[in-house]
Length: 88
Image: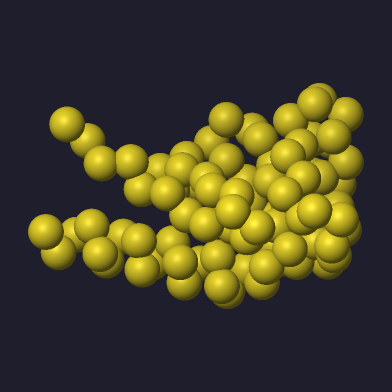
């Protein structure tokens, strides 16, 4: 049996840690282009609840997830999730 590690990305939204490829900031032009392309391909998941996008999470399926919490916060939760499951 494999453990599925889940990461809270804000407002009760959760993603599978094993599917995350990258957690990035949305400010750069290439990331904005990735968001636009994902929207056009119907692979954009907006989990911001109308707030400002602070983190963009890219999944191995090509889905792009928008979060209203900082990329560092998401990354720390990702690391804490890995550490807590590695111990035992």
